[in-house]
Image 1: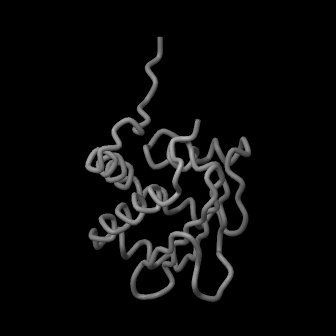
Image 2: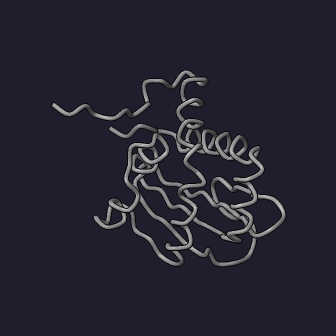
Amino acid sequence: MPYFDDINVFYDLLVGVFDELMQDAAIRQKALDSKLLVRFLYRNPEGEYWIDCRGDEVKVYPGGFPGDGEPDATLAMELDTAHAFWCGQLNLLGALSSGEIDAEGSVPKLLKMLPVIKPAYDIYVGLLKKKGLENLIIEEEEED
């Protein structure tokens, strides 16, 4: 059973993550310097989320991109995979290698942003707690 029945709950979380993340001037500048337009496609439930770093502020578009332009990179995955990533429990390179995440475009440029968004994991988990969604938190499995 998927973590989310309603894509809008996930959108709300990501908007909150990026609002908080962009309060950090260094992170915001690194994102803007990338000049990336990135599209995320989700399955189960269906949806898409765009991040536009091409202007003078980072803009996010849950549900679709209202402007013109082709994305620099597109990542397609199950929504549960995206959720595991934002919980800090998914190795992105491993998921790309295994095909769990399909990627097109300038993925190396996108991967350079990974260290910059590390604080987002704690923000995401914090928002899950704040919104009463603790049951959705994915934690590291302990080794036997």
